[in-house]
Length: 328
Image (cartoon, rainbow, N blue to C red; front, side, top):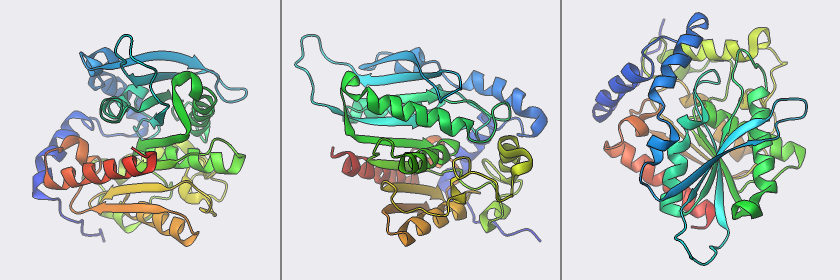
């Protein structure tokens, strides 16, 4: 018997339809991953188009990857300084990790957030191009993102960034990878993050929650898409005790000692219950987490229904946490 879904906020219905038409036109299954990648390539604007005439500078670089793995491409985004302007104080930094279910997308799928933060708050952002499953399964994506964090922190002075004010941020798969990077930094004694912004994060390969069953064949990034993605990432290891928390952060047995977390999710989406549980477990371990569950909201709602009242509230709450966490 299927679980009855939470109804959508009426203001979000049109945006959800737009999301499904633009982003999820091709159902994500094992044999459509490549077709979906090709489609994604048509809907992600290049940086030249994203920046346009905005007062933002950007550059691509290639940095060392994880040990024994290929180098990693990153894009650096920073506010443009006026000619002759005095050197600015060290800026806060954001490591931006894109979404796409760990199987789709490029770093330019998440650079819009970094451009916005550069313009409004003077933030220097680094977007990381991580390896995708199924060609690169397991923890490959997280290792690439962690290598980017290590490089970011080591080059903070060159980039004009305060190394004590760096956060990691991502939505969906990017949120899950942000959580993984925070776990890796803790476990490896790596760079001390000021915070982790987990926007509707993809955390748990098991896909067994009530909310995952409520959105089976319904809504944005439904249970079937989620199954496809986790199967690509984990293969036969999925559901077993051998799954690494760096692949599926919900598998971590200890959530203590992590940087402050901001966790937001829609009440009407697959990831609701696993995200709420992650916040509960951070609190149980004595950590800091700010949790927002937005009523009637679908996966990725604030980006596709930005003018809705609930989206405006979500954007304001997220911005408040960023400003408080980075001392802006």
